[in-house]
Length: 149
Image (cartoon, rainbow, N blue to C red; front, side, top):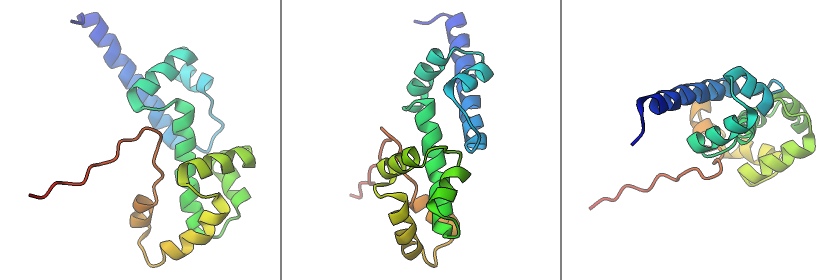
C-alpha cells in the first residue's frame, strides 16, 4: 500500500512527464536533448528517462525521433522537398541518423518512402493518409481485431 505523500509525488511526476511529452510534440524540430527536457521538468536526466520509459514505453529521445519521423513522413508525402531538406526541417542534424531511424520505424528508406507514398496515398485526404501511414513505436501494443460471434 502506498502512502499519500508517495501517491502525490507520483501524480506530480506524471504531470511533469506529460508536460515533457507535450513539449516534444510542440518543439520536435528544435534542438532538444534529455538534459534540457529534464531541466525544464525539474528532474535529473536519469530520473526523467526512467520515468518517461515507464509511463510511455520508450525513452524521451525515442519519442522525439518518432515524432520527427511522423512529421517527415507527412513532408515526404507532399513531395516538394528533398530527403535532405526534410531531415533538417524536422530537426535532425545528421542525414545518416535520420535515414537509419526512418528505416527502422517505417521499414523503407526515406527516398523509397517518398516514391511509394505518392502512389499509395493518391486521392486520399491528408488526415486519413496520416493515420494509415503512422509509424509504429517500439513496444506499442497492436489493437486486437474485434471478435464477432
